[in-house]
Amino acid sequence: MSDDVVARIKANPKYHELKSKRSSFGWMLTILMMIVYYGYIALIAFNKEFLSTKLGEGVTTIGVPIGMGVIIFTVVITGIYVRRANSEFDALTAEILKKEGGK
Image (cartoon, rainbow, N blue to C red):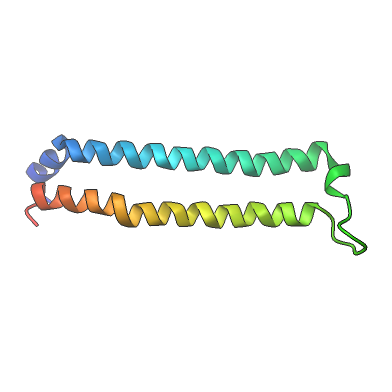
């Protein structure tokens, strides 16, 4: 892209909206992931007794499903981000490029 097109895109209010929405959504998901992950690590560090509580008569402890929950949470928030990126963020990008990029 030429410098003129880049300057017009950077001046477009939709571009600033896209940057703002994408950034705030990304940070929100990052904070949620950090809370879940570091919460689990803190649980391991400070409450081993709880995590070692057996589920039923077998050898599985409560720490296993909680750990699996952390992994599942990661996959779910990744899916949420991808879905929003493929709909809202891509639509805004297309609008910006159509108006400013000459496409």
